[in-house]
Structures are given as C-alpha cells and as structure tokens.
Image (spheres, helix red, strand yellow):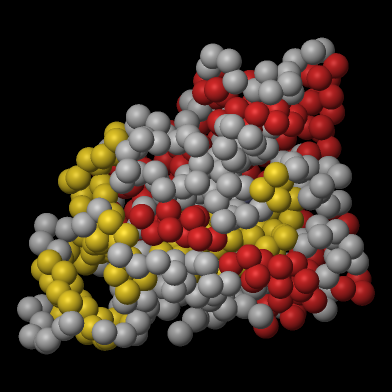
Length: 464
Ligand SMILES: [Zn+2]
C-alpha cells in the first residue's frame, strides 16, 4: 500500500514548507515538491497543514480506581484518540503492591493486545520497590518500558515514601531511564480532607478546596531535589498551577533535567466548575484539582516560553451514572479523572495558535515532538521525515467545531459527558494516518484495530 499526500503545508517542530509526501508501507519514503509518483491512494491536502500525529503521553485506559474501572478500554480509548488526531498513546501499566512490576506489565499487555487502533507504549506505575526487586527495572527497560511513575499522593493506595522514591530514582538513573512524578503532598492533603469531612463538607467542590496549590508545589520541589541528588531525569506529570511551575523554572535555571507536562483541563477549565449546581462538579473531580482561573495564562506562557514542554490529557474517564455517582454522599468517593484524549489537538491548536499564544511549530512540538523525544519514540515518531513512521494528520486550521457529547464528530469516548461541553474550537484533524494506514477520513472511521505496542528507547537514545 502506498499513499501520496499532495499540496499540503508540512509543519514540524522545526520546519514549515509546501511539499508532497509519499508513503510506502508504514513509513515515509519521499518528501518533495510536485512528486511524480504513482500511489494506491492520493490525498489532497490543499490549504491544510500536514503535521505529525499527536502523541498523548498520559492516558489511563481500563484502569482500576476507587472500586471501578476507567470507562475507556484500549479499543474505545485509542479509537477516540485517533478521531482527535492522536496516533500514539503512552498508557500506564500498574504494579500491584508486593508483586512484580513485570507481572503488572503482562496484565497491561493482555488488556491492550489486539484491541488498539493506534500505536501505544507503557509507562510503569511503581507502588513499591524493595532492594531485591530493583533489577526488575532493567528488565522493564529491555522490554521497552523506559519510564516509571511514582506517587506522592493517594496514601494507602499508590503513595510511596521518600526512601522508595530515592531507591527507584537511583536505579532509573543508572539504567538511563526517566522518572515521572505525581507531585502532590498526599499526606498533608489527606489531613485537610479529614478536617473537611469532620466538618460535614461533602459536596464535589470540597475536592478542589482540599488540595492547595502549595502542596503541589512542595511535591514538585521535593521530587526535583531527590532527582537531582539521585541523578535521574525527571518528568512532572499534570502540572496544574503557577506555584508548581515556579519550582520547575527554578530547577531548570540551575540546569536540572526536569521536564513538565500540563493538561488541557488546566488550560481551559478552572475551579468555578466545582461550584455548579447539584452534583455537576463531580465531572471535574480529577487530581490535581482545577485551579483559580488566573493560573491558565501562566501555563500558556510556560508552554510558549519552553518552561512547560508537553501537553497530555491524563485521560481517565468515569461516567456520571454508575461511576462518578459512587461519590454522591461524599466527594472522597468520587473516582478521580476526566475524559479528554479526543479533544487535545483541537483544543491546543485553538488556544495556542488560533488565539495567538504560540507559533504553529510550537503546537506541533508540545503535542507530538517533545513527548516523542522525552519518551524514546523519536525520530520514528514525533516528526515528518524520510524513514519516520507515517503517523500523519491532515489538519484543517480553519475548520470550527463545537465540542459536545451530542456532536458525533467530537465525542467517541466511552463517557456519558464531555468535559468541554459547548467549547468552540478552530483547528480540526481531518485525515489521520497511523503507520500509513488511513484511520479517519471524511468524518468517518475507515480502519479499526492494527495498533501495535512500541518498545521505547532510553533517554538520549534514538528509536529507528
Ligand atoms: Zn494520570
């Protein structure tokens, strides 16, 4: 199978030019002006951007949480991602405390195998790491899992103490791999939650009011300090606020290898969403919580100025009926997470490029190239180049859509609400290719399945 994409404006993190792209099999074979080649399929990209497929480095498909599972599995989740112009997700495999991380990896392979429509990788969530099991981390790296997420939040569930952090950080650093941090002081937050519950405060808004930004900033500061001493590259997931960003900026100024990610919900939604009528606020119960609105502009600036390097969704959907309503009586029982994997590319193009906050190359960088470089997928993914996977989006920068649960073009996630209901976005993924296969075209899905697990490279190594 060969595909020719004609007359498009090719945009990567570095370049912006008009050219044709010829794809042979799964990879890009030729890029040039007015290519004279025969192809099985020709796509006209006149007046369209041709960009590398999005990489969402933070999704949770089929994740057990709070007595239920995130509503999207690898089939529905990767399909929704493809609709939104994302062609690779990096999901999180979970280690059960006291058991091998390799067993956790097997479990996640079984969940994903044969179900995905786009390519995927795994980070490993580490919930304990005694000395005798440290060699597992090298075996994970050899299996293509080169990043490990640890939690300072959720005591009794995912939380690990600072000693465990240090041990895992040291080993990851020695192996040439990266640590990801959920940086929030969960011990203190739990005390604040207890106070709220004692005072009879049970509505969803108390989720937001019991997680101060200072406790996120403290977690960011502490994890950076430990990473610096342990000599490991660090990645702060879902950074939500100005206080936390200040800590990242300070560390980067003194040369620490710390990269931070933010999410669309911190750029577009704010704390006021918790104060809606009735139980509506439960839709936005996620961690870290939504912040005061003024933080949004600080995060956008951080993205434009390279203090923040990636935008990922932390897609972790729970339906209002049957899942979120587990917390009707108390915010502490509301499953944490929100849908978003489908809406990221349009939201960030709209808020970033269309609204004039960044140039188009930076949009490509934060949604695709940076996550590819950070997590060992580059240059196979994250750019448009001869030899790279033909993960390509033909993107219409002028098309406007209104995101809604009821809009058949904007909602394929298996979730009974949209977190961005009614948001009008300009910028739309029209044709989506994954390794040369057309997945989305003419507002319909033409391919199902075929996504593969990608073994990722270590820090600083290239994936070919
Ligand atoms: Zn997450």
